[in-house]
Image (cartoon, rainbow, N blue to C red):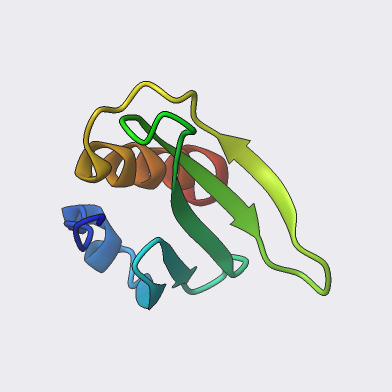
Length: 90
């Protein structure tokens, strides 16, 4: 079972709201930023995790996905926040 994410300090600085939708998915919204979903997914082996960032419009489309290399769900969350920062917040 994934752990609740530890939010990076810059999320609050940028006034980004994070809503936990389920144990694998967060909804992220901020001023002048498109709404996005950040989720972590277990690989088939159940030992590795990856982060997926999805922009939420009328129809969702994937922005970025990290390669499955994380051995711990918390590491995948942190990688996902970094994807969000690079691809959405800039």
